[in-house]
Image (cartoon, rainbow, N blue to C red; front, side, top):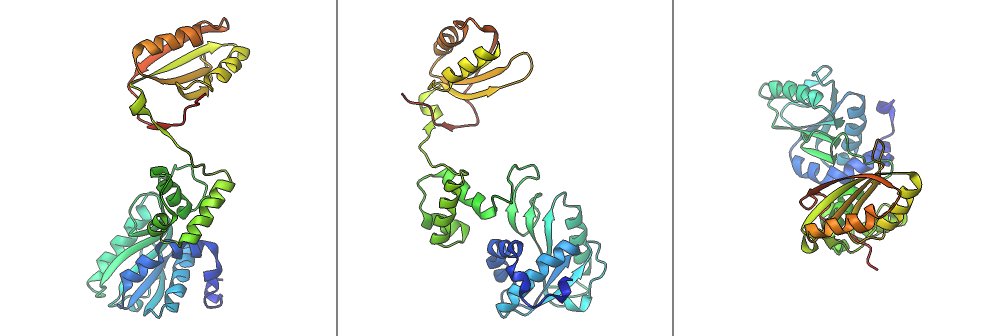
Length: 293
């Protein structure tokens, strides 16, 4: 079906647009003025590879297009002879398919006088591709239906410095300043992003404690309402099991932990049992937005 698509039709597809936005500039630089060949691996690779080939063809690049399975079957070798090679697929998960394809092409490199071999994917979960749009763990919680790779890059930039300018972010993401501004406004409007001042925990505190609390539900609700307003509470979650509330606090000294437990926890008649673990300051988070009354 894809073979019969009108020239450049694939460029209207959003996944192809994301691929080009993410790696197009680097791929153009890779090929330069050299003759090249894009190889689409399997069905998904055919889709992304052909879309990338159509885009490069508009750039007056001398790029051919071929297909093959990751074991090398189906490749028209004359299309890769004497050229720079870019293999394209949808993603790399375990890396097995990537390694098979790379080994097959490297074994043919000298015989076919290929000048270079690189690999491009939309999503690289193993950190193996030369070019990728999304590079994160297979277990990352991001939903690409709601956040794409550019959104995540913008979030990362603002997480490092919430005052970073749109111009600086545009340079890092390779988008225009206007495009970055529009994305930030969309992220804020949809509730994915909130820009606020955070306190550096280590500047104000020196020790932390985790307090596990067993109590009835009315008491738990009352404690949650109280702890949410405490400037010492940085972590608060309802749990299952014997203990049904976990409180994480940061304080300036050990005495403050004892005072917090005596005044805020033990004095409540609904608390049946508590267990306390004292430790260093949290590794994560390092910053926090305490309630200030």
